Length: 133
View 1 (cartoon, rainbow, N blue to C red):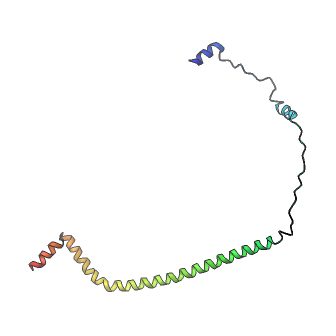
View 2: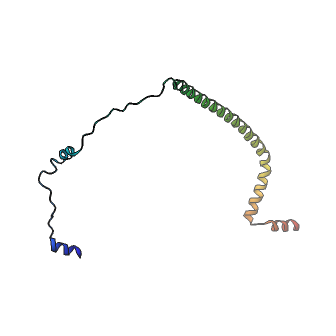
View 3: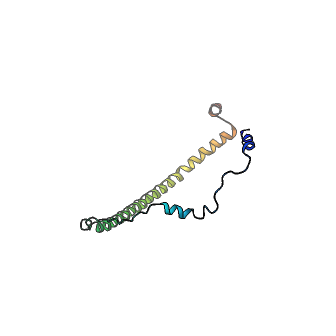
């Protein structure tokens, strides 16, 4: 609504205009208006190199120590892993032997349970059957 009133009063023509060639010399005009700045050299003083001369060998020593610790840790981890693997394989062998001994007893119980489930018998039905016979 307000837009229609503005269009009637001022029209649709653009009233803002840029002079011809304004942007052609815009950059040079701005650069001329900026003040000149003098470049100054900054002197950087390095601290005493004699005091820090021990840092380079210490860095090398620290790197060597970290590699040695890494190798020692990896060797320890590998050794403990192989021992635990060997112990676990021995335990699995013992479990397998024990399982084969008790497997025949478990098979009988398994088949009885399966038969009871198939016949839909619960404990009270089995007790009643055993008492009758």
